[in-house]
Length: 339
Image (cartoon, rainbow, N blue to C red; front, side, top):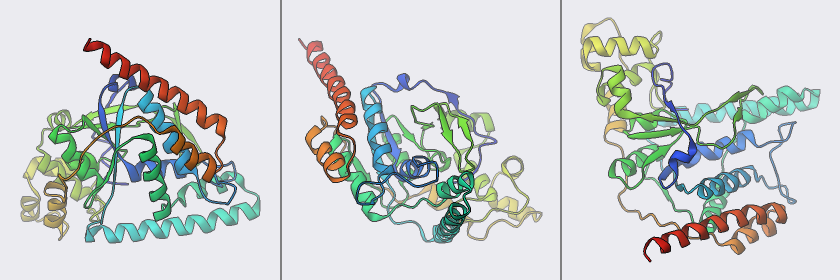
């Protein structure tokens, strides 16, 4: 989920066409969980193939990635690596929530309450190693680069964006801003609405969050933004009871840093704040990667989706035909520009 500073950080509406020709590093885990949560039957059952294997993540990944590439956007997916030890508690809590939601889903189904079943099912989504392996294999078939970060995927995205290897990072979590992503794209989707775990749907509009604009608007530095978020609570620490984003911002503006907030004596700052601060400001990242986009291998995509997972041949071929046609047009246009 990441830190909740949505009350303070606002993006500006963005047309996806504005991203044509740009490379975007996408938070893979964040995106795959969206697909697993949202692509479900009315009773909450995820999409499955003829052998009962979940395919919601593949259906979403194939359609969205193909659509982005048709628009001339170059995606690269960044997967989380080994989580910092301070994140273990958060991960354990999320696991418990998923397990409870799974039990509530089955109970709601037995009672015939489909609305509740769908809501609980969306919250029970989990990624396993087989799903991750399949997602990476599909990206290979589509000619899309991907990499596994040493630790937090959003930290790796930020590093890539700061270096200029990609124009922006894409994630729903504001942690990407804390890690220093200069341009963050939220709601990177072609759908106009998104279903919430409650079952309600809300309108979603792609938006761009620019780190420099955020810091200017709030009147603080990135280091202070991290300190403020530690007071609110992150994936790596519990926040201070009674302190939300606005109060946290006020404290940091007044005192300047967590050390001085602690010296003030009115607020007991999290004991592990220095470790959390280091995770955001000096994260584990890798510079050992290469980004190369290739034409999609249509036959490989068909073998994986249609032969192995019983996707509709007509639908897969229709999507591939549009993608291959667009890629051919752009390749020809590139050649013409040199003639």
